[in-house]
Image (cartoon, rainbow, N blue to C red; front, side, top):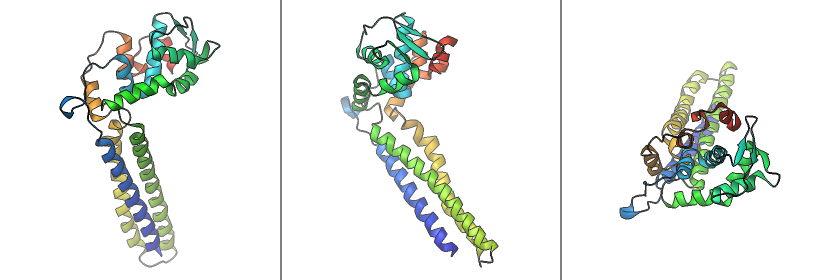
Length: 246
């Protein structure tokens, strides 16, 4: 009887690991762009750096802090943003002002959600994908789903092993041997999940391998915006701004 449980665990392990491997291979085989088939890695601006480092959320945070630094927007430590100057200087600023809404005031969390869906953010992401620096959304979602499925296979394997243990306690022959067999799919799924978290996940969140190279080539700027673009709100020196961005 326990062999049926083992079969279920093995099938789940093989299918989930195969799906994750296919997704990782597809994410790593991104089309190259630029002369000689090499992606363009030079000339990253703050917006591009922010997107590759933290996606749309980081771009929104950068735009908020940039406008707040020029006193064109008030960024309160309570997590609310208020528009002072409704004239944006570029598409991302204009889309941010539109995301805040007609009242000119909105919580930062709501602004992030609305701004992430704005056309300016999508255009920035598509341009970076076209340059070979960013991972396409489909590839990111596929890898994320693959990791989630492997994690589910680990839990299923533990459940099947537990069921086999119950049979062993009930006098089922070879129950002790069953536990050793269940170690095989558990080892496969756990090893695959660990490798994915260490090797695959950092390279399939936003930046492609070429994008990672471009980020490593970005010099440390003297201002807070450069630090924010690369490292996120934790790099801000102003505690009120850190509190506002959560």
